[in-house]
Amino acid sequence: MNSTLSAGGSQGMGRLLRRVTGAVVLLCAWEYFARSGMYSPAITPPLAAILQSLGASLADGSLARHTGATLLRVFVGMGIATAVAVPMAVLMGRYPGWENLLRAPLNVLLPIPSLAWVPLVVLWFGIGNTATVAVVVYAALFPLLFNVWMGVRAVNPLWLRAATVMNAGPVALLVKVVMPGTLPYLITGLRLSFGRAWIAVIGGELLASPEWGLGKVIFDAKEFLNASVMLAALLLIGILGVLFERFVFQRLEAATIERWGMGARRE
Image 1 (cartoon, helix red, strand yellow):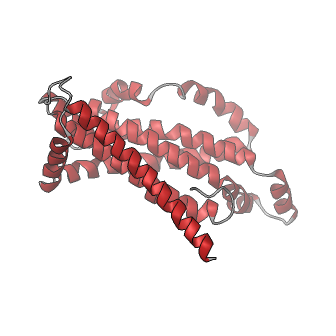
Image 2 (spheres, one colour):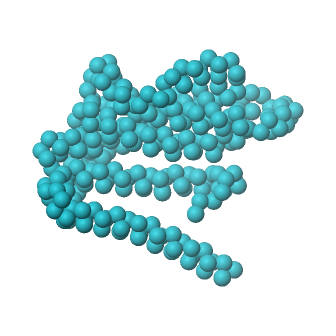
């Protein structure tokens, strides 16, 4: 047992070392590029300048407020997308008539990039929060919808027949068979939708010009040629994405799918 624990600890340290090494290599490559003289330091600032801008923005509280506004738009958009996508996916997966009705328009809308809607939603809703949230909803809707739809279709028919034999009604079938069987697809859909929403909200903030948001930080910094602030915002966006993946989605997966033996354990 001790040898197993030691092996597990060594593997964990090895994974951590590889991840840290990859990050260090990337940072060193940027530092070399910034100091190579290929471009002016004004547009390729070194790491010290980027971290200084990041620290200054955090110290005065402005970056925290911008980050909070962006996250709020993502959460609201994800909530609306989930409320729409999951029932629609269940209907499509359980009832062929709904699938035949909705599949064609969804296939038409799916290839359209979310940012292509920004000019229209600005015309419809004006600049600000509503337009940005609408873009987030559109971006997050389709990955979640298609994943849950495929999950509902993939539920083992034997489970459904067994539950029906035991007098399970439609609601019991949905709650106790369909949704638990769809859970791996649901979590995958949420993970993909969050990534799409994160991209869309920054693009929406760049184009729809709300008062607060990380996209607004990048846009304003571009107007004043402040590359260190732009890169500091991009660095924060990347860090937040990693934190959500590591501490939200992986833990959610571990608490459900891995715990119930429905998927391979993540290394």
